Amino acid sequence: MPFDDPRDFCAHLEERGELIRIRDEVDPAYEVGAYIRKTSDQQGPALLFENVKGHDMCMVGGIFASRRRVLLALAYDREDIYERFGHGIANPVPNRLVDTGPCKDVILKGDGVDLGRLPIPIYSEQDKGPFVTHGIQISKDPEDGTKNASIYRMHLAGKREFSIHAEKHHHLTYQHVKASAKGEPLEIAVAMGCDPVVMLATQVGASYGVDELEIAGGLKGKPVDIVKCETVDLEVPAATEIVFEGLLHPERREHHGPFGEYSGYYGEITHSPIMEVTAITHRRDPVYHAGLTGMPMTENHFLKQIPHEVTLHQELKSKFPGLRDIHSTAAGCCDFMVFINLKPNIPGEARNVILAAMASAKRPKFVVVCDEDIDIFDHTQVLWAISTRVRPAKDVIIIPDYNTPALDPSVGQNQLGSAMGLDATRPFGEPFAEVPAFRGMDRVPDLLALMRAGQS
Ligand code: MN
Image (tube, rainbow, N blue to C red; front, side, top):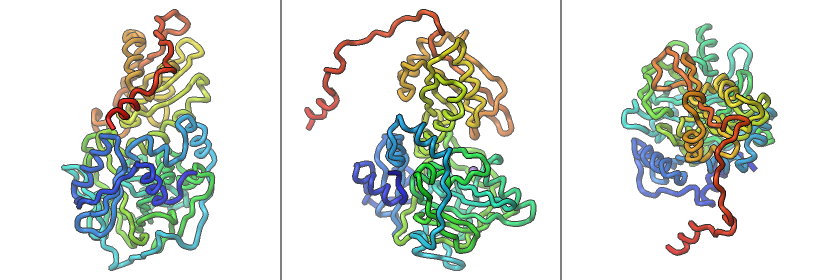
């Protein structure tokens, strides 16, 4: 069963050896970032920091720093993701309003609000300061009440202030612009330390009008329990570790950034709106949830990966029945480089798939289509297919002026990028060199296990 409480998920990870406790003192300024960077680079465990310098709050980081742990969060097998995750997206379940929940153990309002008491990490060397990266911003359309939940980064701007970065096309910006046009602030609640399915549901890229918390319900097959906020007319998941409530101002802004982003580079410095924090509510002995982004692969990439793969699969499968797997590569920042498996049914179909993928909401910059014998989750096999099946003069499609994913550092602000498709399938209906097979592979023992047994 998927998890309802972030603590149950962490306990499950610890039981499986996927989470370890760090008892040495670790500083939220830079050291936490360095630890999560290292475990991300090693595809290592999630980290529970028990001794955070200057704070009595524990911190967890790197929860999603591997695809393996995302599958554990969903309790899915790899082959189930399209059907089960796709079913969840297509069948949202309304939330269930409950009277109270763990996130109300402690309620701080007015003078009791002091963001300096939280161990908010400074991640990369040139980051402007501390950033909250794993908060889910929950807000409502000021006109029709449409709910939205997504993850945006927040810079600690004062004792009771954050600035929040959302792109122009993001749903939070849409609601903020509407409220600002009336000269009013937008009410906002930030839920940090949610269960892993709620986190994944925010990454689906749902259309405006769809409440991502209801998608989380769809993925779980039961409602998400929500509770009313104290100072704003919004609801948050009841099992959240820490909730920030407040107002996103119509006028007040600050220079937000630099911040090391998911493209693996520092992004542009933006002029982002200020959230005035009106209340903090939290669980007893709250656990701060840190989340690293930066050069792939990090938990930011793995959080987006399966939601993006499934939504692109849904978009393409109805048009191309020979479509098998889709892989939004973590190394390719998820949306920059996408690999697709196809059993072509007609000549040139791989080229149609490339163009359809480029026309999708994710706007990938590189699309590689491989035959069904290639495991597209194995980058070596994909590079082999490109090396041996692509005829560069014939099988490459270049789209010169194209809107590539946000934060592509090779594209200047307000400029168009370009895209490339590689048809790495064998020429349709023509003879092609055969791949050698080996006899008796099934009778050879697991040699890595033998080696490990020999070492112990
Ligand atoms: Mn949305």
